[in-house]
Length: 299
Image 1 (cartoon, rainbow, N blue to C red):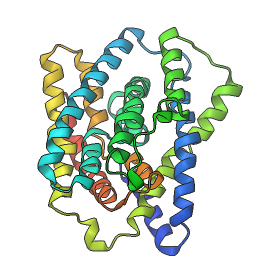
Image 2: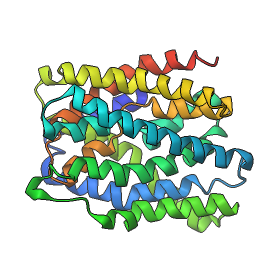
Image 3: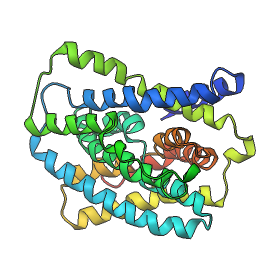
């Protein structure tokens, strides 16, 4: 977590020094969404021999259940947290979506072992679908600049096409994808993590230092994102009889700080990144404490 947060700091410094910002950040955001992230999604399903296939359907099931619950809670809580209708989409996005693809994989590996990264990737299929459908609708729908509505092309853009392909690879149990396909995708996908974190840091560089400390809305959203919602989902899933191992991985995945896609989507669709950047910064900082505490539930 400290290593990943350090990249955010580098992005912040780069923004302050003029290496990043403005048009560069927007172009880099488009590159991440349309090219490097789809490569990361595809490469996550090309890791050779598939671990325990019997857990694939439970993972997809618990992930779908989780995002239904989180979406309903976010819809209600965002209206309680802020009266500003333009901020509700940002707060709702922050409550639902954690940084699964960027921070989730290394954290899951450190807690459950390297093999668990595949399970996190299966969970991330539903997360990716939700980010680019529900998440995009929250960022752009109704309150978007120029009355822009949800763009249905998101459903068959490169991020979603890669998610569909990854689902197919998992469902068919396709193993040992040729290296001349998997290795380039892996190399391109590896750009995603540092690029996305640098963008977050650069966006923060536009904020005054006092703003990075946040507001009551930022504080409450962060507490709900990192502690309250993961615990609600954890106990609901345990009560419904999901496999404890699956529940554990799912809980860690949704306890991640706010997804960097929030800032990237705000940039792409012309929304102000201030509130999203503040929540992302604070949740990223606090997650270094909250994630180890949550892990105590099953260790």
